[in-house]
Amino acid sequence: MDSAPVVVHPPFLSGGRRVTMRRHDLEEVLGVAYSDHDLVVFLEAAGVVSPENVLEDPQLVQWRGAGAHEWRAA
Image (cartoon, rainbow, N blue to C red):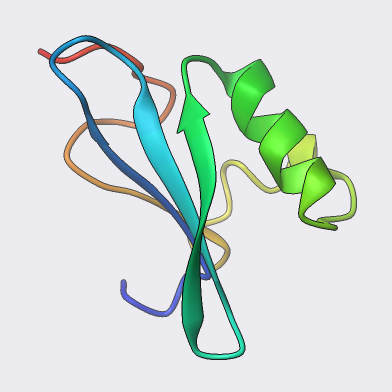
């Protein structure tokens, strides 16, 4: 689903996943998350209300290249 504004990209070999957010048709890198907590912090800083509640919403967050909540390369 390419319409989700937040994308958690595939894990790096060293661990962690790049997180981007699309706003106003521009993709902004929020950072590299190493845990759900990191992701929640990035989303909160980006203005997402109750970010801990959106992680499972595929309309808002797309997990690419690995399952949701997986932070290390397979």
